[in-house]
Image 1 (cartoon, rainbow, N blue to C red):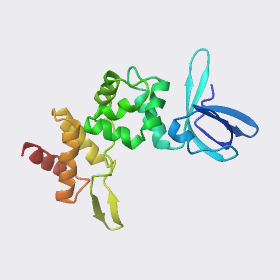
Image 2 (tube, rainbow, N blue to C red):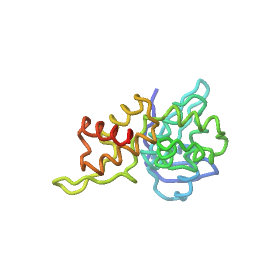
Image 3 (tube, rainbow, N blue to C red):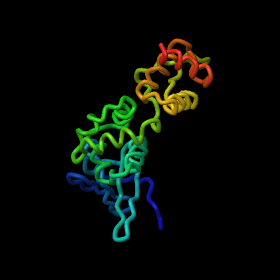
Image 4 (cartoon, rainbow, N blue to C red):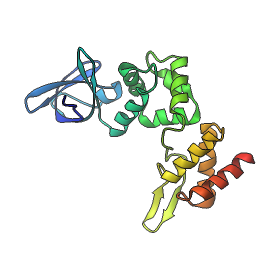
Length: 205
């Protein structure tokens, strides 16, 4: 079975929850978030990152203007109780960064703004994805390097330290805040041992 991963073409129609993209005279129905649908127009070029959802009786395409949103959609739908439509509902009101903020700060109310997402499901998402998402660059310092400043977001050492702190029993938002402070104070973002030591010092006060 061919799995479609990306579509580039022209928008020829769209409705409340999907658009139709013409690619070489073939029209593909692609379900998308309200946020993305608000950014397209008929006869306009579109480049969609696609998730192909396969069931016994149908194949459905879900599309995203951002590769980050597609990745987040895959994370969301990996949570028990979050189906394809629920995942899209969340991304209709939240960007990928919004979801990361909700999970890393333990603020499930951000997710409850989505249609059909109640308190229990939102809390399950926060619990299941805790420690599995990157740290947002917003709120974290930039560290000097020979090539200028570089963001600390997604560095392996930082994510490893956060994971280690979570395994020690610290809450994810506590770990994020401690690592952020450790990076600011040490101006280092790639030394696991140093960052873990400083983060523990900060957490233990």
